[in-house]
Length: 151
Figure 1: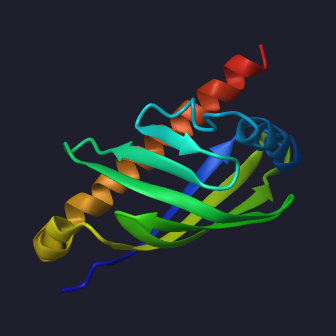
Figure 2 (figure 1 turned 90 degrees about the vertical axis):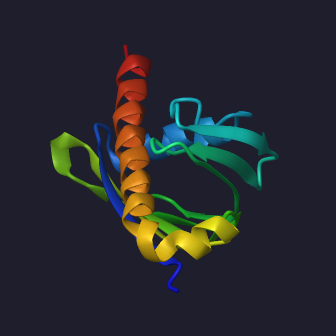
């Protein structure tokens, strides 16, 4: 039974990576750094560890904490996750010229929910599709948040 997942998403953001970092710094200074992402609710954040509940389009939700955030402005940030999803992530930022920048989110996790471990052999494609849907929604809503913010 394989419960390891390599989840990679690439977002296109209409800001330079320096300007995006300014926005991320502002968001991380608030109680809810992901206010722009409807499927991801921050349930606790103390400036170091962020606990979130991610709601899948397929009717299940996962709760996990993101910690050990290490920022290397303007190139990358890394984090670990514990809870329903255990592993680590790396977000890299690359300028795309006048189009903005690309964020590549590489998250490598294992599931710690028993039902996901037991059913993973058959439901793995659903779990991966659910992740990709949430991430596409995240990119769409971040872009909308940034456009609204710049008006």
